[in-house]
Length: 266
Image (tube, rainbow, N blue to C red; front, side, top):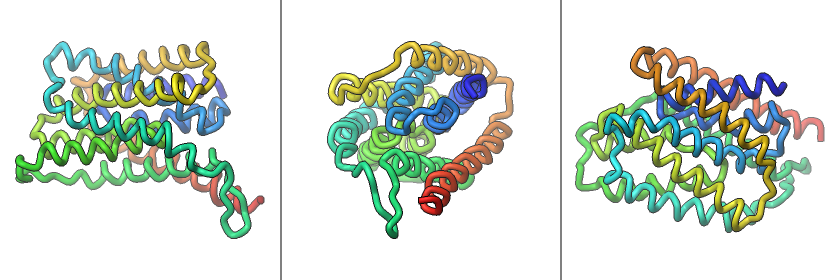
């Protein structure tokens, strides 16, 4: 299973490098199922992997001047506040075991199920691909702040980078071109994910296997660098369609394994 895990991380990095979104949604399922790691710990690992992979994936966009730091300020400020609240306070309030119709679900099952819901949301948002080009620009700061809170909540809760929300937000409210939105998204994901990881290490005192973390991070970085290189030569719509199908399949699998079978067998 390990070799499939490493291959999956390369593919995740490529998707993140090409699209600036979505690839991070694969990190937690990969670590949970292919590396047989508890979901709560997989989220911590995923935060670092997604953060460092996004950082390396953003290098090309930085060189091309396709990262808008000014537009990022309010978004990242409210994201970090939200992540801190979730990782330090909210997660501790989730019960270690939840009973549904007399059947029990563990905290890890609850978290991975929330993650599967986020994956489905990501897929459907890509399918819908709604555009609001005439949205009043005067609401830009408010919109960026609110979306920052939402993305921070998602990142803090399940370790997803939230690029599927960040890219549309930047194109709709900040009028950024798609390529610039991707580059800016990667920087925002970097800040959010590494901050979330830091809260786990320094405040929650979570024990980490650093050898494992470094290996999967390096593999993902290789994928991200490949993705940023082929971005100009590959039809993004093809990857997008395949990725949507992959997200729906994985999220459905998680739901069946963690909810249907768990409740049936308990």
